[in-house]
Length: 88
Image (cartoon, rainbow, N blue to C red; front, side, top):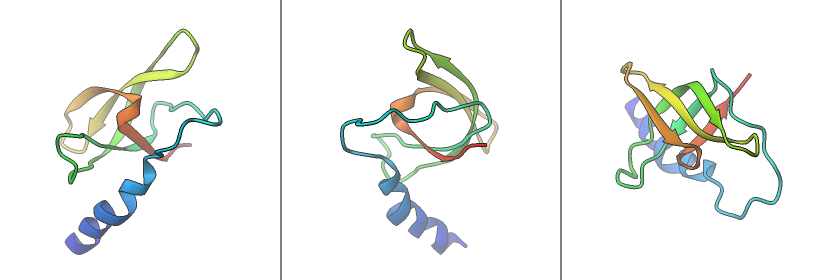
């Protein structure tokens, strides 16, 4: 199982973060979505989390969100540093 997690984080997760300019509008994140969080200071560790709440900007797009990690800790992060894995 550990081997799968290591390969998943090395090979699959980096491809989730789009690198091109935004050409089309994407669906806003919602509470309950499953995301992966990445930190430029720790590029090898991309934990999974659940979105607890979102804050929208004046343009009605999600700009920041609060999420909970599996250890129960909650954080607030800019939407640029998360990637959507699953949403209802």
